[in-house]
Amino acid sequence: MQQDDKTVLASAVYDALKERIMDQVYPPGERLNIDAMALDLNLSPTPVPEPLARLAAERLVTFAPFKGYRADARAAPA
Image (cartoon, rainbow, N blue to C red; front, top):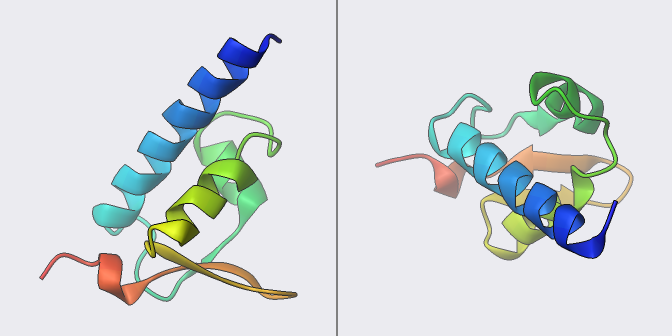
């Protein structure tokens, strides 16, 4: 896979995860399991962590070492 393909895939995964978080498919406070999300997106788990880190930088998810990612309550629509 070329670098452009990886970038496109990471962007598509980011968009899909962001939409699911904003639509509360992953409710606020829910632990986000990388394997389950990959299965939901019909992917291997490999491309999922990078978009999650981007979502954490945008505060749509939170990350705690040894605990993983959780959907952030602030991502919920008002």
